[in-house]
Length: 340
Length: 104
Image (cartoon, rainbow over the protein chains, first blue to last red):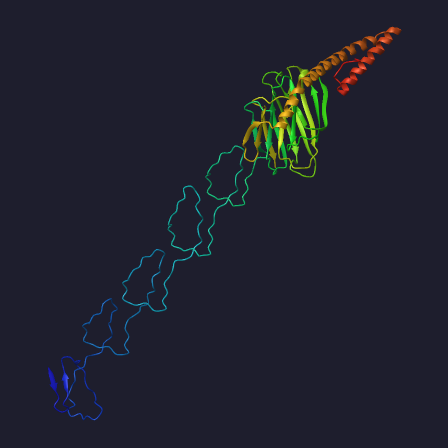
């Protein structure tokens, strides 16, 4: 419905214009002719605008002033996020301030590494983070001692070994051995590593030559020249002391090997020590011990001990053992050890 | 041909092979010399046994001589000869000169 004011010629839309407002004064070139004229104006009200996800016309019959305050924020702190949180639109009807701060998960000391057989990759359950410069610890332990004949094994320890770890070793290490499967004219240990202090050779030998015994000899580094000196002292059961020696000989005698005419299954057992075999200053020396039984009589049982020299300062890299005549029989055995 | 074995201490590999010509020649020479060596050793052992037997007998002979009061010239001469033989035997034993028992 329209109302036309007869004095001003103004037309007011009483339907669409605010209702209830009162014109207190009109400045300008107009003259108020009828002070009783009332223009209907809507009332002011506290804003009740709600932040939402869709625009809406609203239904209030009031207006807001230009300096009114609407509720955009509240005093509730943002939530604390956590590792693994899923994205969410949220449901709060207030906005975030531009300087708002979310709480974050804390840093924590990393836990150790599981190296057990039962260990498996796992996501874990911690709600804390690792810094990029954090350090994970791995347990280490002293390795065990290995022994000759040990079989390779994965192990069960739940700790790791450092790259510079050192295994303990037996006091003497068996470098090589040979147990004759048939007759052998000689036994040679070659490519002897130089990493030990001393060498010693243990033997149990019997020859096939037609005698009760035959000499037992060594040569080094394939030297067959007259570069050896030796002496062997024998003590028989009677007792009688004997000796055999060689000067500028072609070999060192280290005792005597039982031979074909000795009692059946009788071997000579003995040992030869070669101290500082890898040194390059002194001529190499040997210290030998052996036991010989030519027959089952006191006069034919010998204890033998000897010393020998190789007129050479070179490191010993090979040792040849051979009988004075004939071959070693099958079953003769030779064991070469290194002492650290 | 005789065989020798070489054990490589780095690999543990044992290789059996015929002796090389030089080693074979040395083997043959030692084998050829063996009978003489054995004979010498056998003789030395026998001589040793003989000398030890003489030494044992000498003790009783010397004890017997010492019991004689006023030995005759013949007895003295015999004892001197016996002592000389005993002395030679002792020297042979001392020096391990067992290739013979001569003079004992």
